[in-house]
Length: 452
Ligand code: ATP
Image (tube, rainbow, N blue to C red; front, side):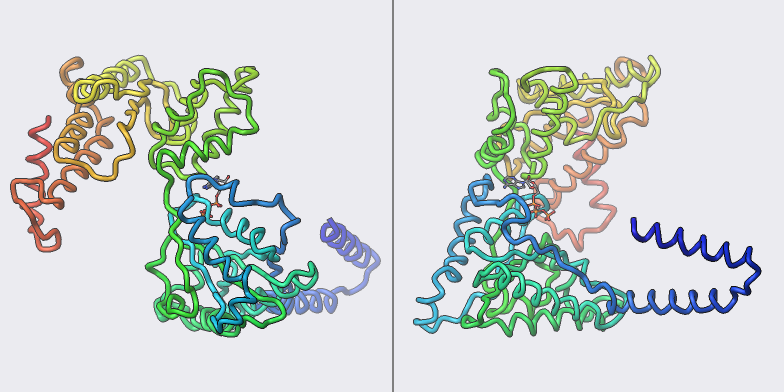
């Protein structure tokens, strides 16, 4: 607001001077020089040095470990590591060096940030958060300066709140802590990472404010080995996608403030949402509540949850209305998938619809049997036949096929390739890197053809 008023006043002054007949060239020159200097200083990080989010435990709603579902073993491991901070007196007596860093690894949306926030509450620490991308600038030295500032902010924040612990959380650490010498502007990256290593090395158990760094990444393989060596990130905690029981727990957490109808079965929703992260499940519960509100219902019913699973998986409904002929073709195609799915596993069809959603004009969604991490040859062959059944149905009922099957074929070919790589094809166990492309292609198409 202040910025807009200043711009408006400056423009008014310039117009007044022009009307009054003054020569404003020197003024324009001065303004351009001032603007250039300001821009340069900003780029160098000299002005407006990054202010890191400094929320303590009061800025936002406090998170505790009981607000995190489906991560019992990760929480247990993290708590054990945090107990080193809580019991620092006995640690000092035994001459144990302090724990400096904890690395949380796992897919997006599994609760890594939540765990860091809960850790701050558990250790009664001031909490300062930043993301790896905030340290990367074009100019050498800016990132390193921001790392210094981050540690300084954490200490200052703890002192202000009269706390003896500070917890720094860096999300997407791979951006700042990637292997050195790999990026084009490597000097800047290397300096930033070096500064982080220096700051971590400087952490001591008898510091006035004890600082602990918690970092999160989805790509631990990209991190520089110097960060991972003992004495830096001493503990690694894996925060994985939740299993079925975990999904039930997370759904309970995210529906505790929502009125649920009697027909709602969280167990069924959890079974159907295999592969969902905590963030997906939070969105699922939220979408179900929005659907209920749109329909004017006072309670959220099972059908709202079923529809929101489709929405989270495939995207929102589209207004696009296909022609009658296309609708008929989509109906035939999806029914083909559904029939075959029921033949290979009865009761496996969860949703069958011609409602356009995301990229699809219609879809058939299968209910997973249970959380499955390993697939047998029979399972993969059955899945290939289900994927091909849409285009086969089009051919039988309508006499020809359409372009709507290309996505199905891609999935079928991927499943067949998995079979080849897993030694389930007629080639037996193969080395995927040295397998001739022609032979691979031939074997994959053979597998698919048999199921057609
Ligand atoms: P990213 O790697 O993308 O930064 P993240 O692992 O840090 O993701 P969070 O930011 O902690 O994920 O989670 C995002 C949101 O998803 C949370 O605010 C919460 O609503 C929900 N959520 C994620 N995991 C859980 C969980 N285990 N229990 C309860 N809610 C969860």
